[in-house]
Length: 315
Image (cartoon, rainbow, N blue to C red):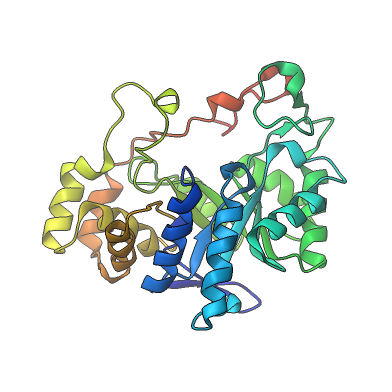
């Protein structure tokens, strides 16, 4: 398994287990299966509503003694209703309590959008806080305190554009160490990836398989199926792999991590085996030609021009 190494020598597997849309015993069992198969990178978030079950899975696995806490890289994320000063550390402490952990390996600002405290999902403009009311740099100061207080070993962001990252880096004391964004062959984000590499920021790909199990309300018309792209299928056949394994392996070949979500033991195991898939230069060139800048997660659901959120991705 390829790893990405932080400046303090911590390492993160390039293939992790995503848990968005997984809940209850299903996610608990998935985490336990993943760890027993060999996964050492688990991704969750406060808004996923599954931290308690993941915490139970982690506690049970660690209690068995074969896998230690320090062997597993665990990520969670600050939700949009906790951006204000005074809310960030308590939100992280609540996450740690649910996960039954003393620290996170990585804590991310989930979106560059702020809601009023207590607003889980906005229904009207007044549910938002404007960028003047909750500047991103102020939220980042709270993240820096989390790292300084050793509640998180690493801190970063999610869904940040190059423009937003540059603005944050100019004011930050501690530079973001990770940016988690949607990435796959139809959305390659080469400029953002190059910028992150130039700044020493690791990139983690979410929805690397296209997130086909999202709710219908989040889907566009006639969405493409990444696993049915002919080029991907041809490369998979040549590599004696599945299309999903090629899609996952592609990220490690670009120097990124990926967090495919699955709750099926067979799929979890197959995703892990993607680490053994080798893509040659010709394969990478063929995949590079597939880029269409197509987003499955458009971010439109958080756009509120009256509060300064006109274009989440600055495109």
